[in-house]
Image (cartoon, rainbow, N blue to C red):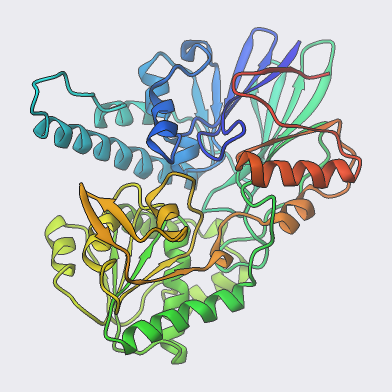
Length: 463
């Protein structure tokens, strides 16, 4: 018997975690963290919905926190199998998990310091030691297009998803001795025609497809228009003697924005005197990892590499140390500050928002997805004040939302990736239930494609 079950990103955006059961074997695809409101994030400490010790192999599509962030917890609770993924994802996942563990330990210490009643403090979800231990279970790296044995009756093929460095869709070939079926997991899909990475490999023939729907309800703005708007936001802010704060995801978005800033300064679209601060230790490490993995780059970017570093530019400063980050707060104008996290629910960007969000001369430029319940979403939705570090901050800065930079495929991109090949069923996950998921379901059912929106922990028999 073959059973599929969804243990995260079921009728919601984050926490991707899927399981295939084939006879006595259990294979997990991703094990990510829930992100968003405090209510959503409480799900991280809840039971997985399965016994971690019973998982034979974990297949990891990519290194974003909502796909790999609970792996250390999985290991802590008994997982002793193999983790298979691409070389770039393995390197990036190491950075992401260690960073997440460090932030959780820091938050736990901060909460303990503020504990005035002497009540037991909430421990971190996992520690740095847990994250380091989890790295021991990563097996041999898997190359794009390579078919690898997983367990008896299951093989996997990793296909370039074009989302972030090392990202993959995973095609499983499953045979329980009676039934033979193929299941394709999209992971997160990137957009075609972007710089740096190759386009996503179109979905091959598969009986079942588990597909993300982050932007299943709408198209993106064009990339050239998005670049032009970002340059306009920067010029306007610098003219008014303010700073530009860009909340960025450390993986892919940061590197892409650096690439566009470099081109903008080189071509005169951005003043050459601007100071650019990359204030994210994780993003700095990720940028260094990018340079080690040319096997993921498209031909145009590889050609650019022959003439210099496409991420570098005059006035670029990498700030790893906390003291260097704090020094940026004394700069009142002429700076572009890139800091994580992209949803503003953690990381150094909250400090920069605290110091710039109330200033009319400044701008905040959002270039990625903001989940419901996050600080970024509240600002995007027009809040006049927001709470940062227990202080109410007025929102007076100019707020720009430029969705053309998203690393996720839009609705036309998702439909193009899926193609017209016949499918027994498409299972829709990883999207806002009342927006991306339902819109994509309506679109596909209108084309005669059988769809289902799995519930959390719901077993679905593959027939």
